[in-house]
Image (cartoon, rainbow, N blue to C red; front, side, top):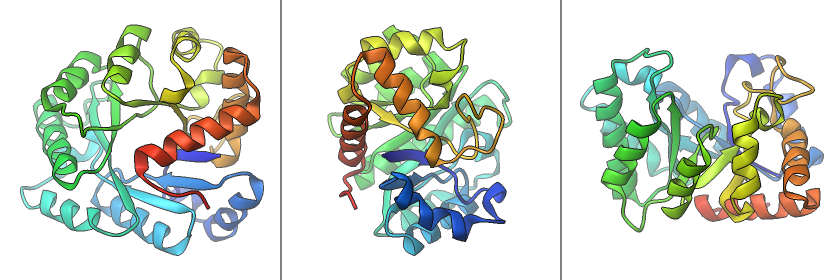
Length: 256
């Protein structure tokens, strides 16, 4: 399995990170993409990727943290993004649920980071919460045929899913698909071809049932795979095979 979105630099892994991560390969996890959320965690992601052969990194600043960005910080991200195991710009986007950063700043830095990804020919990992149309409109504004990426923790309607898929994006499906109130997401998974889906954890967040509320990690992908297989009437092995291939394609990485 390829966990296309995790945050193993998070403090909740401080006590067992070096014991836990090497064992993932023995538990069916072939690849992990560790996402940056600010400058500090982007550096930490790179360090993890250097330490573990099966971990890759993305660098970027989450909408919560763009309020702290300065003009020269795009250059810092540009330098980081040229590290050999950095394969994406993210997690970037808009979050109107918490509004930790002013919305005009969120939009400004989202567009700046999309432009950086375009310049470096890297995919983007998009966070969008309660900002559906603004996110989509910004992506459309900057869209070109080289643009690619993942809509992380996809939570919008089937119509919005189709718009992103038609532009070549992949939808990130994680623990939320196992929740009882995930009817909208179930409809998306049911109707969008699996060739456009990737699996993710958002570790340590968003643990699936039956571990909801506990620290999430890549081993919980088995529950996501099981639910996708159930919805689509497919074998679990096939879900793993296709979603892993999709993740490798979007990030341009090889299997281990």
